[in-house]
Image 1 (cartoon, rainbow, N blue to C red):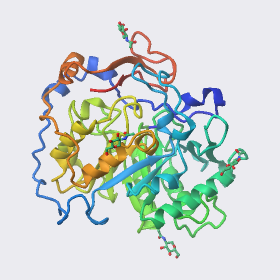
Image 2 (cartoon, protein in one colour; image 1 turned 135 degrees about the vertical axis):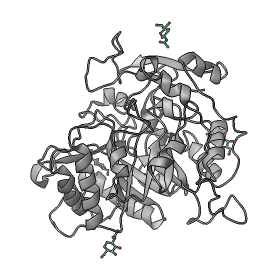
Image 3 (cartoon, rainbow, N blue to C red; image 1 turned 60 degrees about the vertical axis):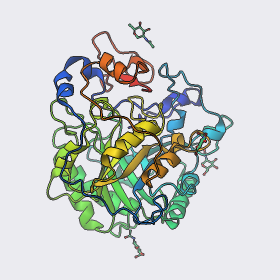
Length: 451
Ligand SMILES: *[C@@H]1O[C@H](CO)[C@@H](O)[C@H](O)[C@H]1NC(C)=O
Ligand SMILES: *[C@@H]1O[C@H](CO)[C@@H](O)[C@H](O)[C@H]1NC(C)=O
Ligand SMILES: *[C@@H]1O[C@H](CO)[C@@H](O)[C@H](O)[C@H]1NC(C)=O
Ligand SMILES: *[C@@H]1O[C@H](CO)[C@@H](O)[C@H](O)[C@H]1NC(C)=O
């Protein structure tokens, strides 16, 4: 989800965390996806619609164990994206007071059940190297951009000299603090497809062993680097948004191995709602999710990045229920600029979606990308979502969506208010006339704004 780039100067910093519209993006829409749209209809008619254990008593105050989960991504400073209604770089940098804050600030809100640390963005290739990128964290420099939150480990477990270990130790203390407040903290592995991660032969087992020692209760290597010190993360999550030869098997190996090493930790996968252009399923992680030897505590489906399978253009929760029988959370954007390919639902739309899924036995909660753009003082969307998950109506809802066939249908579906910005390859370059990008690691996509 994030575009992690080499260290940049503070002048270019605001562009660093632009969230790239991972995966197929809207590029496919003009060309191949028409048939897909036409057949989409959004009613959830699955058999699993018996009511969940609805909390009794006041619906706005379920006990913590009963309540639907609110997940939040932390680390990518989505509030600093700079994506305005007219595209990249058209929103001024937020004031320092709104920059991404230290983790504990978000745990103190009491809104989140779980934080996904984003991202362990770099790994693979056989030498055991890996790296974390949390963007800029906390009130650091005069521009309010914070301290550089990157932790890099080279071959042989050597921590790179430009890593701010003081900052990471502080994040470690925040993790323990959050856990003390009942908030789970898991490491999200992967992110945006242009990030430098890959699964080479043997990497699955290799990283299961390395990260068991670096993030979990690992006991097989006392010298392993531990970015967060003594803090033990609650689990690990795979957010792999591209693929390569043998990757599926490596990810299966990773999941099976890590589960064996630390059976009590929490494991999840975050597929895109649909990144394959033929099937509904995410082809990058779908086969891992469905592998019978892989045991996941839940999945979070990214209902951003791919408008074709997201509300209101083809919300495919029912389809995912056929792929995965466990708890399912919906991944949404915290505001219109957090994920440039959409995924933000205003309260009315949010209510419409919850009306469709909240009585489904597999519905587990909502995950927001990210906490910085969903929290005060920038917004209080996370508290809106929390209330909605707790059973309070936050909007009037909308009628069920119909099939969509084209951009202009989208516009009419939005009452003429569809706010569509032209395609881009990422931070600066526009797409080539043929919808390709000069940087072959990037995809051409459209920024979908408010409906
Ligand atoms: C590292 O982070 C800490 C905050 O935890 C900060 O005080 C310090 O100045 C940072 N060091 C560098 C070199 O940025
Ligand atoms: C890690 O080990 C400690 C000490 O043995 C134990 O108290 C704790 O519950 C373990 N945590 C996990 C997540 O397994
Ligand atoms: C936060 O929510 C309240 C309603 O609960 C609303 O009145 C207020 O304007 C919201 N604040 C922001 C910054 O969105
Ligand atoms: C998008 O492209 C169309 C046609 O090329 C142009 O008329 C329009 O101004 C562009 N919109 C934006 C926001 O750049």
